[in-house]
Length: 79
Image 1 (tube, rainbow, N blue to C red):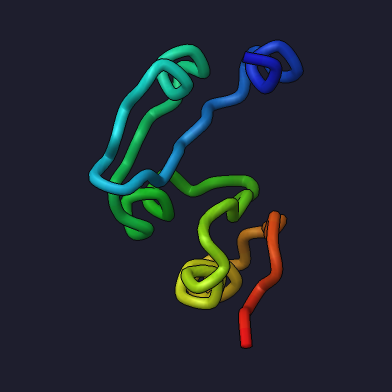
Image 2 (spheres, helix red, strand yellow):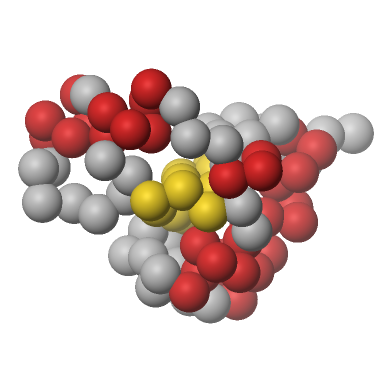
């Protein structure tokens, strides 16, 4: 994966519905978790939120409270 090529020593933790592992996560060498609490337990240096917009507020609020820098890929909230 291009992410792995950019930072070979980076530990990736992905939050995925049901802890779904697939070719992408395997190729990235990522640890996959199914809850935000489990992702937070990994003490990330940063977070990228790339989920459906209607889930953003529920996901970014705990990240901000934990003081984790983040990038939100899409609008933070929808009307």
